[in-house]
Length: 211
Image 1 (tube, helix red, strand yellow):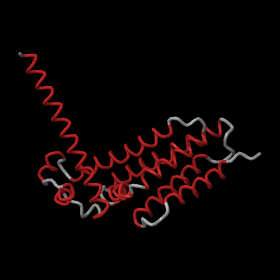
Image 2 (tube, rainbow, N blue to C red):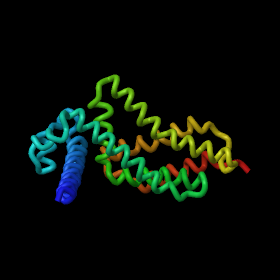
Image 3 (tube, rainbow, N blue to C red):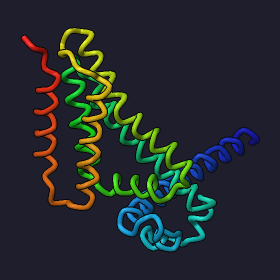
Image 4 (cartoon, rainbow, N blue to C red):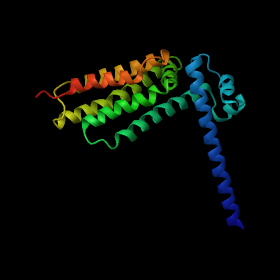
């Protein structure tokens, strides 16, 4: 009997944990939408609750403050972005393929979800204190260009790519990518596929090894 009670309690705890995770995910998704549409300063628990179709008190149960909630949004977006790209790149055999897939996968993921990048911008440039904002922007920039730099250096080491400054070229590529994503959030009519093709043509020309 005691064993059965323990089993029932574990099942209840698992069910409760699943429900809480689903609710937190629902709140995060609603927050992304509100941040993208209303901006950080106009984002409130009441507006998020209206977006999610739940009560504001339920949000307060899961997140103590707006800052804690937007931090969860920041973590969610960056993790999902990185995991998506990593999964796509995993099977690439050459440095050229890794670089191409890395850029195409990221642009496809973020470009078809412009609200994600807009929400990131609101959190990073409006929602954080000056000190925190500088720290997090540095983290985002580092996470953006360092994987590119590593692939560029690997391609040079293997003799696949030509001679260039991998670090600075990675910054240029990353800036072009995020610059477009920032514009796309404001101008949804911009052509994602055309930009991706143009970026890849430019990058492949720059990294090509002279014969």
